[in-house]
Length: 442
Ligand SMILES: Cc1cc2nc3c(=O)[nH]c(=O)nc-3n(C[C@H](O)[C@H](O)[C@H](O)COP(=O)(O)O)c2cc1C
Image (cartoon, rainbow, N blue to C red):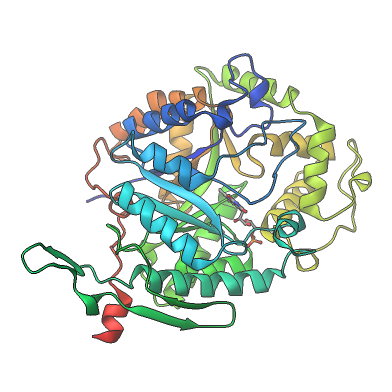
């Protein structure tokens, strides 16, 4: 079959634009509403999207004074969404730095059972001292240490998911045997970060393992992705950067002994759609006018690792910013922002305007045909296997994308018109993992 696009909807209350909640049409409490999330997920499922996704961090992430900052726990919310959908994949973010593998492996196995094989895990290492301070630490562990822990976290989680063989449960009422005893095994993991005896208290789930997703693109992040990720979210402001990233992670996957087609690369895009080019540009400008620079400059200073007083709104970024090597937080996002500001000679105010929509993701502004053309161009020129769709305003942005852009791509044979698979892995064209403990133990 010809290669087709994959689409994930990045759920984000009233939209990815930081000022979207202030629009007259927006429900400022959508972040806490099951009905609002059900509506978004239904629109995406009707449009045959592969998945929806919820970001997360175990910390109050944004200034509650300036935007809706409350976030429901993602696996709980997705379990509720599983009950009102049948096909679309459900991807939740969870941190390997501030969880234990046993709890998390159990939670994702449960979600995979409850949804009939539609669970995915966006594996993050959680940057920032603020989250660390919620877990008895004074500062975040070093970047390298966070990724080392993540790697062992995945070793333990996959062993736990495999601690029951697929045929362990026989449920033989006649003989009184529910599961065959030696098909449920302890994992006996002893490592630098974790000691876990096992077995998991949830049998192997429909997908074997949830879909493994990753979104960090520093050198450590890319190595981790090459080893574990089956889908990758990434922020790239230009086509050239998407092409570089795409080629690099596929190359690293091959070096790690994996099939590059089993690593699906999904750059984030912010579609701003208008019926005419002028209408789309006006929509973008309207959102930019709603940004609060005093708030946005604080967020920017945190990512760049500088004191906020050093950023002057009508001047360029200071010349002597900390380098990527000198910060322990979001390394790749810092570099993306600094390179963008320097390349386009932007003042801090202009930079904030550009970041307001997608925090470094590329904005596709235009008519439905223009947006579809750009998507096709990326897809056919080594930049993407699909996209993480991040509408500036929700729900209107996904409604417009589903009603106007998706049919154009379906007409061109670039996107499915019906689901052909049942599980999230099947939507993304990914194999169900063999049971590694079964292989090792014969
Ligand atoms: C689309 C997308 C979604 C992300 N979602 C989260 C998230 O939910 N939680 C989080 O802590 N980080 C999230 N990140 C950030 C990355 O996981 C990572 O921390 C960041 O890119 C810096 O990682 P690096 O230092 O390896 O580059 C996301 C990144 C992207 C591109």
